[in-house]
Length: 313
Image (cartoon, rainbow, N blue to C red):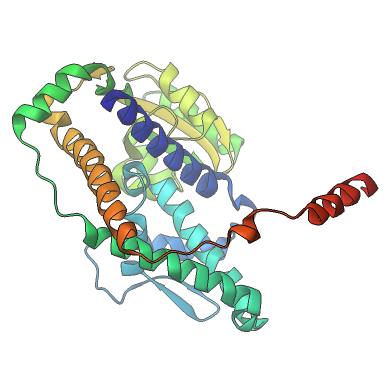
C-alpha cells in the first residue's frame, strides 16, 4: 500500500513539473523582443541588493528579489540553466503586461472576478487551517532504512549529461564557428567571445541535466554525443546552437544516505494524511449539520420536466 502511495506521489510531482516546463518553455515564445533580452541581461550575478531591478514593464519594476523568490519554487534545473531563467523572466514580464491591461479595463471591480477571489480566499483559509491541524511528524532511521530496502527500485538517479554551448543567431555564423572548431580553436574561448547566451561568461557551460528537461532537439543532440564530442548546428526557437558534451553520468542506484530526505518526506506526508483524516472526522462529529432531503430528492413533476427538456434537445 505504501509503495502504491509512493508511486502516486512521484508521478504527481513529475506531472506538475512537466506542466510547468511546458507552460514556460512553450507558452509565449512569440513575445520575445530585443528590449526584453536587454532587461534579462540584468540577471547575471546573484549577490545583489534586494531593490535591484530585473526588468521594467510599463514603469512597473520586477525586482531581482521577486524573480529569485518565484524561481526558487520551480524545479532545480530552471534555477541553474540560463536559457530557462531567461524564459522564466519573460513569463513574469508577460504576466505584468496582462495584469496591467486587466487593471486598465477595471476587471478587479467585476462581480465575477470578485466571486472567484472569494472562492480562492476560502481555499487559502482551509489550506492554512490544515497546516495547523497536524503536528510535525518524526520518523526514525530504522523506519527510513526499511522503506528504502522495500522500495529500492524507485530511488534511481537518471542518466545525465553536462553540456557547454555556443548560441548564435544565424546558421551562417554557426558554420564559421564549426570550421574554427575543426581547425583546433578552443570551444570555451569561442563560447566566451561568440555566444549570445548568458552562459557565455562561463565558457558556455550549462551544467548537468537529464532527459525531459530541455527542448527535444537540444536533448536529442546532447544525449547522442560522447564525452568531448561537438555537435553540428542545432536550430531552436532561441537561435542556432553548437554543443559540446563535457561530462556524463550514467543511470545509477541512489544510496540510502542520498535517498534519506526524500523517504522522510514521503513517510511524513503519508502519516500527516492519516492524522488529518482522523482530525477531520472528530471535527465533523462536533459540527451541527442538517440536510434538506427534499431538496436532494426530486419530485415526480420535476423529473417529467427534465425528461421533456432532454427530448426537445
